[in-house]
Length: 69
Image (tube, rainbow, N blue to C red; front, top):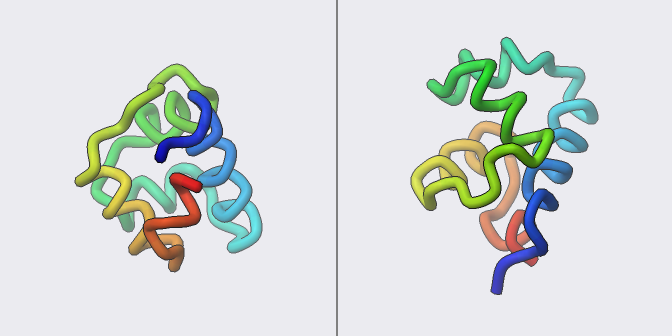
């Protein structure tokens, strides 16, 4: 089951900040662009692909489930 639209971005931002990472750093370690990270965190990208979610979960040290719960 998915969260309401935009919540995944909020969770990504929260974890990124907890780690003390910039969007630039998260983009570098995930292989995504900073603009994509920004759009995702701000809810402009509502439904990222499962591959993207897996990448971000791995980089942020999160289980896949918490991003979707």
